[in-house]
Image (cartoon, rainbow, N blue to C red; front, side, top):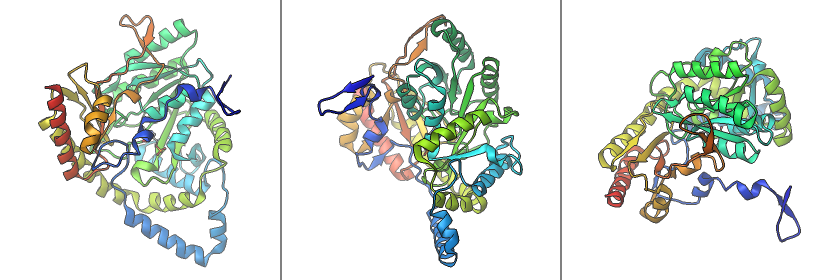
Length: 425
Ligand SMILES: Cc1ncc(COP(=O)(O)O)c(C=O)c1O
């Protein structure tokens, strides 16, 4: 069904019910105190400058290599880069693939965002059911709804998604919608937006639910390398047969935003996802794979050793300033990642309206919580027997500590705290 508009052409129906990404909309504001997008503020720029300098000299000496690197490549990524990533995934994150013989289980996409889109595109027909935490990464929710997925949102606490509620949702989905969910989506390490980390027991429980019901579990590990302390093992470590978990990683947070995501997908899923990627972009730029290959082979450990303590200082500056200056509410206490989630005690507080009226004129930007809830999603009723429309919590905000330096964070959060206290009494 197409949606006619006035100029002779017509847009597809989804354009009428999917709003512009709130984060993209916020990019137009230039403020002093930027706590909005998940932009990395600590990038080893000198390392990348050196890699690019060496590469440039190498290309001058070796035009045949340059010709290959400036050309089209395999849709799923260059084999030399897949081998490098397979080794790191195996050695550092315990992902159960043999880097010698199973490196081709790894795939490259244009950012992990493309992997999310292609996974949804290959798994979801209109009316299919998807389980997400409440709140959830909006870059997952919007494509899920665009493709006609029915999202059931699951309550979260300070340890993330609650597996017992997921079990209820699977049953309700079977009874109310006549089908089992196709996907469970989680960000186990320092979630976006809440910053919470799933304990091992919950990881195991989610894996067991997915196994028992033949559901694809998407483990989005965007923040797995940005951790202030040791986190539980990836859910993917439980998936010895590579048949249940779609594991997604990204260079965006741990390297630089070169639009390179990497994934380990069950073979049949990988085949479909790469088919889709072939139509989306043919392939990912070989040149950026070459740059990142050198980074992941020789520099990432030093870069992480230097970078993570800096992110921790930013997090501490933000947490301290919230505790000292915000009115009554609850904040999460992340052990990594980029975000703190804050919820006002005042249920009537509208973080979006406040941002437009008060925060932006005061040079402050955050992301109000509402975009992290689906537009047409469902939640379980209290007795876990039925669903109702999901409820966005307007009194919430996501505060990103990754981009601004610590002194700006301390100053800006204190300013925001004073404004909030004045507003909320
Ligand atoms: C949880 C999560 N997944 C995926 C992405 C997309 O990352 P990219 O496409 O840059 O790899 C982001 C970016 O903010 C994210 O926070």
